[in-house]
Length: 160
Image (tube, rainbow, N blue to C red; front, side):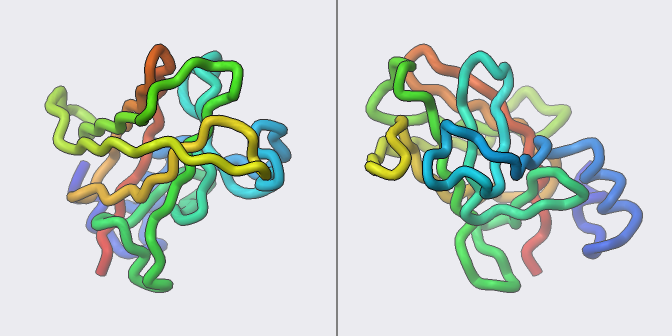
């Protein structure tokens, strides 16, 4: 699969991979997002976990969630910032652990821990992050805090 991620933007190979990789990006209103509602977001699986990721950074490729490797969009020079949001009613820890593995692998090769933040505009549990996946391909991220656990698929694209 990594060969497909090396394809140039707009090529059939890149578009084919995007259709099979990456969580669906939503833009419909979501009350969990507070004042951010109406922006781009992805839902964690299973839905009952309640976790969503709001895309301050991140890309949309054929309706699917994608980022550039290294955590920086080469066109805009902005970070691939994702705000992970968990409903206030859920019990969470002080940090959100993000682990990732490439599709087809059982080995976790990406690990980050991010601290909880707060905002009166979005009164939920907020965990700001920058996704800086090291190599291109389809990644499965597992996000955990206390008893909340969800997965999100993301396409990591080459940053030229």
